[in-house]
Structures are given as structure tokens and as C-alpha cells.
Amino acid sequence: MNGVLLSVKNLKMYYPVRGGILLRQTGELRAVDDVSFEIKYGETLGLVGESGCGKSTVAKTLLRLYEPTAGQIVFQGRDLAKISKKEMRSLRQEMQIIFQDPAESLNTRHTVGSILEEPFVIHDKGNARQRKQWVDELLQKVGLPADSNTKYPHEFSGGQRQRIGIARAIALKPKLLICDEPVSALDVSVQSQILNLLMQLQNDLDLTLIFIAHDLAVVKHISDRIVVMYLGKIVETAGSDLIYKRPLHPYTQSLIRSIPIPDPVQRSKLATIEGDLPSAINPPSGCHFHTRCPYAKDKCRTDVPMLESASDNGEHKIACHFAGDVGLAI
Image (cartoon, rainbow, N blue to C red; front, side, top):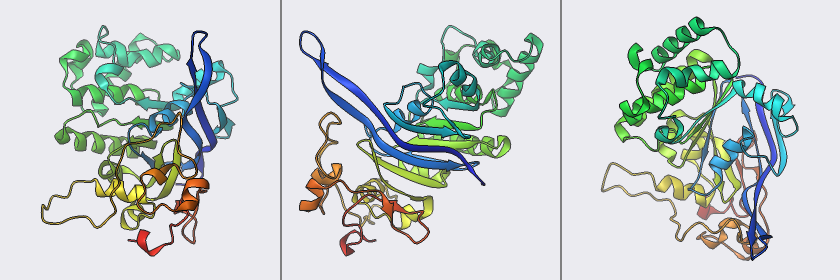
């Protein structure tokens, strides 16, 4: 894994909040607030956090499905936040996304063959005979029978529909594949099959993955590095193994503690959290997590913590004023 494929710097995605008779702007919802990270060629970056923390917004902003409020999205040396829509359309064949719910993301009026052929048609690739051949090859790659191309999405199970979504995403041989909670809508028995398929395709097609989920157990299985988000900000980032062995941020600890333990006698020693995620329209002052943190002090309520290195090599970073305290160490 040499070189950086994608570099995100100070990314912000704010939505205006309007009210009153004239619908004037009364505030803003800070869905993504000053997020920065990098991902190398061939790497899998896990993006985790509770629902509403900004994970999916990051994904859609990277693809310019949402226009970023501020920041840089540098993909292979080009800032996607500054290029035209025409240039972005051409680049989209190198950046694709797998959506969370395959039933929602597939056109029920089209056959699977038509759905998988559409990317080639949009980007003017090949003739009718070649496109049919490529569709057959895609079905084979994702483990679906050849006669699937004449059927409609409703004729398949949830796991099979997600395979169709994956086939569509890899059709144009992208370099970056964003997986937006691709297994959360599936049965547990099917999740591992889809995860193994993604890892196999990554190896075969030399893909770079951003894998988004709220389940840390799933993310650990597939990711090289993990980024933990809370209320639009990154609170901790580290290698997959390290963040499980030594989570430093109390929010990361609580996410790991939420992973079910198969032994009913064994209990986690990590700290718990209480309360709901605050509103991104009116986030808490200082550290956003201080309203739920069992270790919060006066400084947490007034000063915003910076994402700083917590290891000699700089790979483990944390945004917490008191990460070095004995009470937070594992």
C-alpha cells in the first residue's frame, strides 16, 4: 500500500435551518465539521459511529452527491471540491458507492441486466454485444447465476440484491469503493458472506475501500484502519487491532463495550455512556462528548480538543483533553 489515493482536509458539510413565514435561515446543522483523514492505495478505512454522527454524509460529500460547505477532497492529486460537474461526472467511474439498502437503490422496473449495463451506457463503453458480455462477467464475479440478467430485483433475496448493487459498483473498475453500511440491512448469516465477497473483490480488482458502519465488530473484520466519528467530528483514529486493544477515547470505549460478548458470565471492563446523541443544530460547547462522558471536567465544557497524536509513529490520534489519565487507559 504505497501512496495516498484520497486526502480529505478540513471537510465541512453544513445544512441551513430555516424557519418563520419567510423561511429565513435561523441556524445550521453541522453534519460534518472539520474532518480530515487520508487513505492509501489498497487500504480499507473503517468509518464508525452512532447513527447521526455524519458517516454517510462524509461518504456522499466525497462523491459530490452533496456539495461541501468547505474543505478539500484531493483524489489522485485533484481537488474534487473545485472541479466542474462535467469533470466530476467523468471521475465518478473511478469512485463508486454501495448503498445501505439494496431494495431502495435498485430500480424495480428494470431487469438486473439493464441495471448492470447502465454504467457502461452512461459512460459510453463498448457496444451492445460487449456490454452483455461484461454483465455476464459481473454476475459471475459476485456469485449470481447467469440467468439473473433477465430477472427483476424483487425476485431476489436481500443478500442477492446487495450482490447486484456490488456488481453495479465495480462495473467500471473503480479505484475507490465506498461501502455505506452495506450489511446493516442484511441477516447476520448473510453479512459474513457479503464481507468476504468485498474482501475477495478488493484483492482481485485492487480496490481501495471506505467501509462505513455503526457495528465495530463488523468494521474490525474488514478494516486496516478505523476512524471514529461523534457529532460530525473525528474523535479517534488508529489501526484496527490497536483501537480494539487500547481504545483511548471514552466514546470509542463505549462503542467497543456495545459489542455483544458470547459468554454471558463475562462482562466488559470498559466505561459505559448514557443519554442520546445531542443535536447537530445546537451542539454542546467545548468537547461535544462532554454531556455524556463519565470523565468530563470543566475544561471539556469550554475548550474544543484537537485531534493529536497518541503514539510515537503518529498513527494513533485522539481528540480528548484527558486521554493520558489512568482512568481512560485499558
